[in-house]
Image 1 (cartoon, one colour):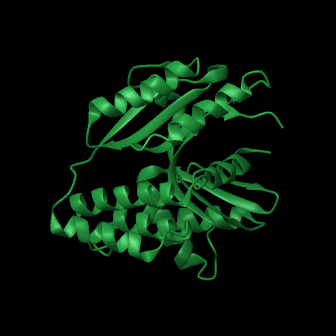
Image 2 (cartoon, one colour):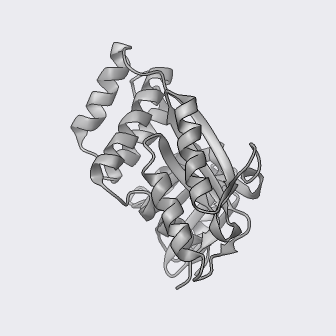
Image 3 (cartoon, rainbow, N blue to C red):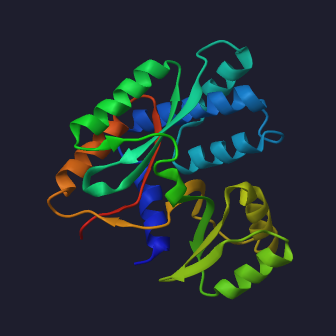
Length: 240
């Protein structure tokens, strides 16, 4: 069904699971971004993007406010980002992004997920070199050429503009996120953007067999259950 479908599917999968788990992940990330770049979304664009994304995923306002207040107070945990890469069931490539206040605990938990699911954790760069770090925007439309022209006129660096079943997907370098968003809003004020995120998109896909599917699902579930895991990216294509 094309990359556009995969982007939509992955975006929806990120909010699956218990609501409290989703709220906790957003709360932690908002706290870290606000603490490092300031609690004002107007001057901290990364925070602004994150808050908008949280609201789209129906994170309650009090969760966002609590994280911001915690960042302003300066107290609390000292989280740092960590990334783990490797090969999952079916030889798919996996990137696991974490925020942790205890690196030893996090690597132990993540490695345990790999070990128990016949997967192999690797060194930095094992999988990420086969992914593109992209800004992704998705919305309804039927003329990708008009969108591309508007972005080029705004001097935006665009990787690709795709159309699939009445859905347009814009792919750009992750550093161009705000330029793409601004250009789309200024050129098409009535446009309703359904997907806007920075993510890792695989350059090649790995088809998961029906035999490997149960182990792959177990692997994903175990990673999702790790408190320090924020996002999981993979190149697996699951059987219909």
